Image (cartoon, rainbow, N blue to C red; front, side, top):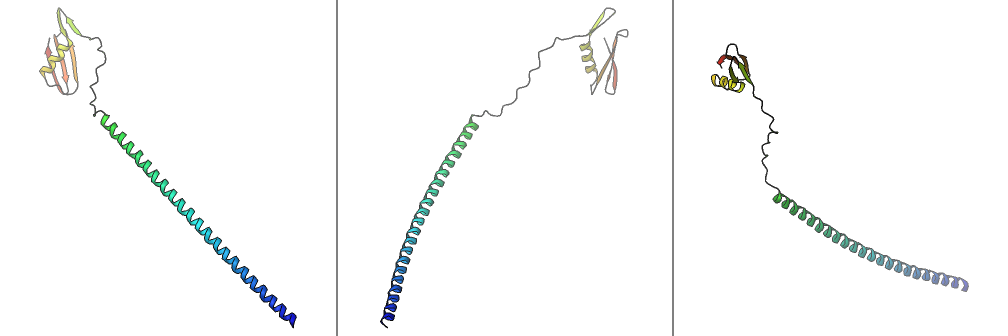
Amino acid sequence: MATKKNVKEEIKETIEKVEKTTAETAKKATEAAADTAKKVEKAAVDTTKKVEKAAVDTTKKATKAVAETAAKTAETVKKAPAVKKTAAKKPAAKAAETEVFVQYQGKEVALTELVNRVKAACEVKGDLKLYVKPEDGACYYVAGDVTGKVEF
């Protein structure tokens, strides 16, 4: 029986060694896991701080850029001239004037003079048509639905 006792004791000792080794390994694994968790947590905090700092910096830059753009826009608006009235277009270079005269049997009358006489004789509404008849010494006109005669 001595051998059975020795075997039992050896098994008991082996079990105790395995339990002790298992406990130590579990303790080391737990410590390693805790250490890793602390490192991960620290890395997360550091990363969070970096992200927050980057966000603040970006916000400051964006705010500054917006403020500069607003200032430039305001300056441009101040510098912009008031709404200019467009100047009346100058007429093209004056063409040579043409005057038309009607001459007949020693008498002479300018066409512009005839037009002015017709306008004085009636109210011209719409088209104006003139018919010059030197043999009658008169200018006949049609202004809209009004007809008449003006002497030279």
